[in-house]
Image 1 (cartoon, helix red, strand yellow):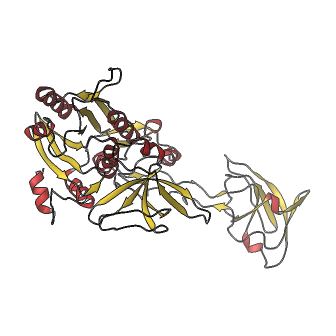
Image 2 (cartoon, one colour):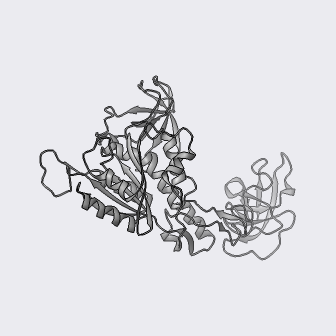
Image 3 (tube, helix red, strand yellow):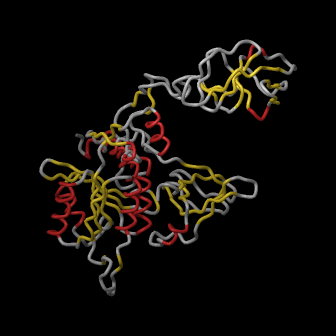
Length: 425
């Protein structure tokens, strides 16, 4: 396991006093390794879990050629360009069992969706395209081509081929795919455990009376929501007072019980509290000043207890800064810890509806509202006040406008990158 100093030495241009957002994610990619323990869960329990090994299809899907339509099946060799086709119906094939019989030239088979295609047929004309009378159907010219409306054996999945790849997060479509293979369970990585607590004597838990200079803890609930959406096991440790003994006990407990620890507050420059000192005392921790807005101060490292280490994320105290640093850094790192192969957030392009002031040399994450413009293109405007304590703006926004490190001012109409919230927060 590499130390913080070793990882920093491997990153050229590493400056902990002015670390770019890109450098932070590079650092975390070196620091965080995926969990290795796996378990087998049923299909209903697999939603949101991460696949622990390639899933090889035991069968072909579909297991035979079948009709994609209700219609009439025949062989395409009878089609003549520009000419109608008249065929005699010799029977009906239903889904769920093979039709017994043969279909000769000049004949067709009425066939239902999903029914097995006899080997002598390769094309299906939909019911609505033909004229049927008694035991004959007339197929007008040009309504069907050779091979139309036939699903081929294994065109979805072929037996012996990978159906899903290790590291995929299993969504609703993946559950259906697993079930279509007849598999009752699947191997996934165990759930990652994340312990979280807020720090500070000024932080109040819900139910406590409000007092001068104190604020109710919102970070605990937003982080709980973010973690729950990721499908991790959350260990809520509440609010820890700014006392060395209490902080030490909390960090030690978290390191014993969790794979990762998240704190909010106590990492700013010049803080008159004990959180930073306790982090350093108990682990291998780096404190950064990230070239970003909001969320400049952050601590990252490991806390060790009884030879067991947990990844540490010390986030700032302001509510918006907590959420932004979580989305920009913590979420991708936790996805890597969970075994996910794809960890980088997908950014969309949208036209800025307003001019945005931006200094090169830092990454800015501005709260934005993305909508569809009159011309059909995506547009984004800010929520107004971008203060890191304005939590209301995160409720109003549906994404973050990402203004990159080297980027300068943005003119109205310019394209910008947007990290959407849907499905994330």
